[in-house]
Image (cartoon, rainbow over all chains, first blue to last red; front, side, top):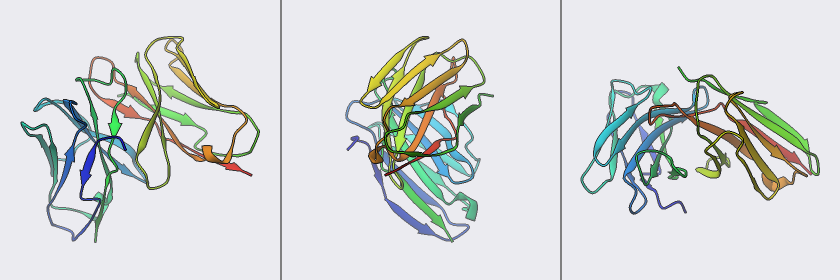
Length: 114
Length: 111
């Protein structure tokens, strides 16, 4: 167990809908990273937050947004969902603003858009 | 744009054999990470390589980093079935907090 908790584990929803994925980092970790894993795109970096502030942005669609709250948990909001958004979404956390040691990954949320 | 490529993408090997997975990246980076992923599971950290020439070993796996060549290797010695998994390298885009993963190498060790 990495100590990073993601909920829900599975999510099935229809096209056009909006969902929220939640991530609780390891105790004491200030950074949260979101990744999308799909068969055709591999592991894609979406966004990083450090202590509530956005620090790095990757290939995140405009339909997607994220935030990190004062208690350091993070939410990834996906809206106007398309079939192609079906993927495994991972959250990772690290103590500092970067991976001085390594980042610890949660179990992921598997999103299926039908 | 930082590109991280691994080869091979797929590797099927016999138990007891040795093999090397390569991770090439396209721009300057000083940090490289190796992760393992079992099917449908999360990513587990294997190695953190923070400087040129760094070499780390754990059991049958050994990782090295050559920042000048922009190359890392993951060497497998005397493979066993339990090593079957997908292995990813990840590289930090220098000057940022973006960590970019490679394409992954799916390893299958045959008994």
